[in-house]
Figure 1 (cartoon, rainbow, N blue to C red):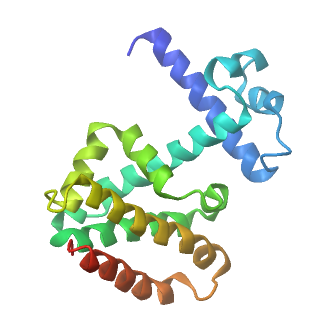
Figure 2 (figure 1 turned 120 degrees about the vertical axis):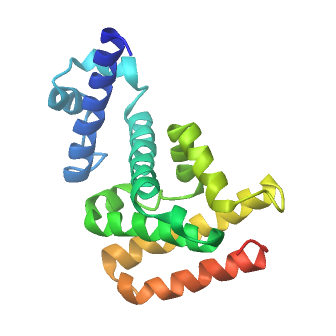
Length: 196
């Protein structure tokens, strides 16, 4: 990466960091583009070189944060040491859920956007690394790529739909009580798809 490209990347990341701080303290609706630019130390007009508007920045920021969670899980969960797709998925899931428990502000920022689409975009942001990890987790395409995609969708939607209530509100139970239920549900989904 050249010096000019490096400076552009730093400005983009600075805007994203500033926006995350403001979005999570003031709220998205009450945060202006001018405030984001000021907090990033960048002229307001420069904002539009990187993002169309505040909603575009929010979508990109969600994808970026999800990719960071996934990257951490792929690097630190130890999923490669597990046997079978279900154990690998659950190991990665547990790592991501632990990260979200440690950073409830990030989970609140996702506000139920931790979903299939977010995951796909996070894998896309990780590029070849993300695609190889998915291949490694799910194994050979026994049922075809469409089966893998549908199975991934069901698992991610289950996790995303439940983790916010369980982590942030401890409803209906706390995460440690919920985890065995989640594990059984994921294994059951995978078994019904013939992939466990």
